[in-house]
Length: 335
Image 1 (tube, helix red, strand yellow):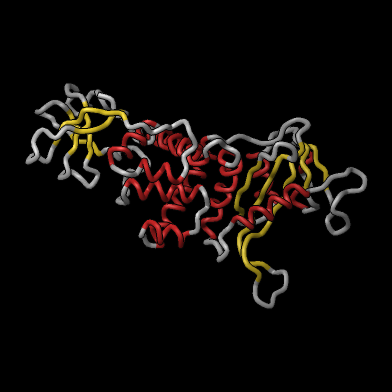
Image 2 (spheres, one colour; image 1 turned 90 degrees about the vertical axis):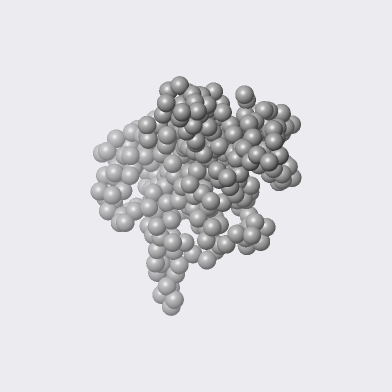
């Protein structure tokens, strides 16, 4: 049996359970998925499962040996009494009959939300759809939307860990800076309450790194620089005293004094690239403030969108590919 060809034969109308044979649904997974396509995919649970399996978003246990009894093989079954999903995997050994949720080790595992709503909310997150619209269209509460949008950003954090690499290198220019994210205090002029963030960006490739910091001491910033930027990199910064040691730490170091010039008249050094990145980052944050503990997730979201999603042929499929990568890594760590 092949899960990509899915339909069922009701052997007896009075029997709840039915063994599955398969029929191919013509869902083209090579074309970019648009909203109208997603509606077609979500017309039935059969179509959803076929499509999710075809792109590797759920496991296909067809024919796999049951680990419980080591004799039976898994096959797909339908039984409305098993769960709201209707489908499940069942061992063919009658003495064992182990059942496995079709959501097992997938993007859908551990969530009560229906398959179609999970797909739609993931799609809406990709395209930055307003939460009020999502609430109206999917008939779900604000907290569910917030949880799922946070869940999507957690994928971004994990992807950056999996694909972590230092930026910079010999003859590569990296601009570094710190910026404070938050709101101005009422009647306090330029004073801002919030979260300090360290950032670095390659001037040419625009590869970047960001991290929240509790302070801007030499020890804190130097560790971040060494963890994220390759030795031999030409680093350009402002005149913050914590950076004075960079020349003796394996980096070429140029400084620009922003109190005098935006571009150093002698070296041509400037930090315009990182400054414009701060503006873009702050613009990408929610209008009504952000919980301090979630800043890292928003920075990861910004980096992942820029690196993997923006400019891809299909942003939705691009993100699903990242989801699969996270699930594979999670399962490796678990086993």
